Length: 293
Image 1 (spheres, rainbow, N blue to C red):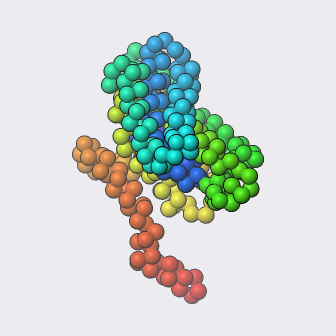
Image 2 (image 1 turned 60 degrees about the horizontal axis):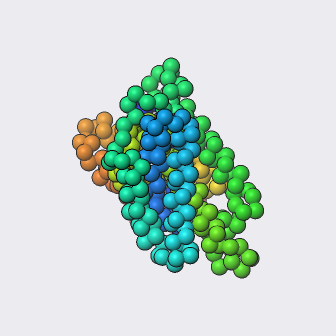
Image 3 (image 1 turned 90 degrees about the vertical axis):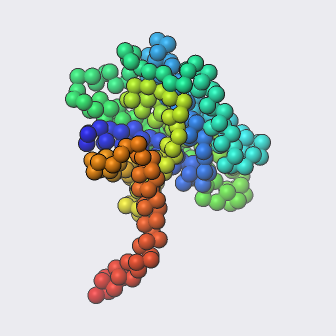
């Protein structure tokens, strides 16, 4: 169970990183994630069942997610649809797209190949751990490379201060579209990997996944406060694993898994309130007195 939780933590960390690129860096509350995540799963599983190699099917899933992000970006920047509503519109529309792709509400991978088959000889869940680590290295390395380019710096500047970025000649609308495309591509990758790990795809698989992604981000920010951008991406991975371990602890205590989403939301709420609780209990003052003493 422990290795399984860690393995799932790595796969869900990809989702957290994808959400972070818009939610924190771009200051864009994108709800497309709840559509692009199951879309990635649906496209990958359908591709594999149709005889496409798992690697190719996973890549196609990434491009599908990028397409979803592109539509959201165009609705927001060109159509002037409010940010929240643009994500909701795409998320809602993707439900029908997934039904069209799979031709049914869910689709199984039983007796079909998966990415993890290359490491089939390893103990249980170690194949998922290896694939998860490999994908995280690719995603984090790719993002860090991008962030240190001139376009990446323009992207960060857009999130920091859009007015200033625009005054410097940065096409902020293009940066927003780019961010949504990249973010949802990463989120779709997470969906494709988790679907192959679970062995199926479901059109309702995206319900509540934003909570899971945000949990890894919030836990990382509470536990690791002052870090660089590159270190933050790594801490999100740690936060995701910690979150999965917390859920494992909840299950071990004998709580009904039917209410796992309630427990998930509660864990996130506690971490979100931690800074306020810290102030309310005047821990800052106590810490300051101890240091002066």
